Image (tube, rainbow, N blue to C red; front, top):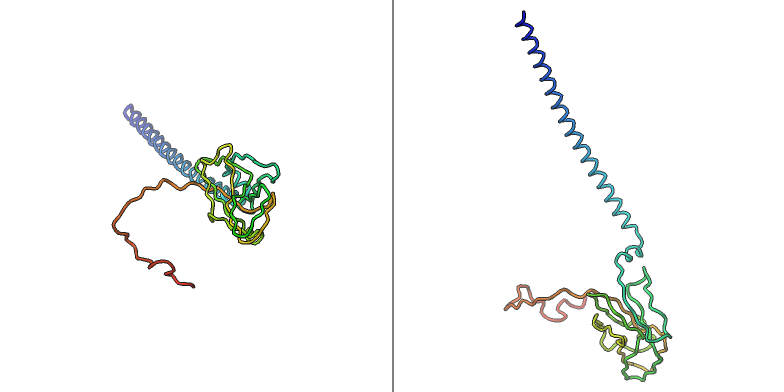
Length: 213
């Protein structure tokens, strides 16, 4: 009789241990499933947030975008008679520059026209100065260097900007007339020249080789 009781107890304990083991396995499996579900939901939420953020960025105004990319330029005015420079957001990246004095030119005459400003450009930038589209029509002048390049080292207290012009007809330019425009550009990266005996590509056969049309 005692032996039967012992065997029954052993059987009961074995059943309990088996049940406990099954519960542990089920619990671990449930934890794993819940973890996977949480990861999936988190990824979906992250993807949705990322898409919403991209849409938000795409829908932002240009001014908001430019605010994040803005650079500070220290500027000195050499004349109190010209209007202060302004950046018109959304219209053009180019900023108009004005004549800082009255100028009278005869046909064939050259002059450096003062622009009434000096600037300390951001590190790693240079300024490109070109005529406005209406400069020749309005004043009959051309910029003799085609495009002026002002590097960041031209930033002393007396380093005023000028526009070198050549008059193709008799003309007058007045103080505050907009005669050219500028923008800043990042300096090119450091260049290393690799000298070779031959270049590997097909020749273009000189200037104008692609034809007129």
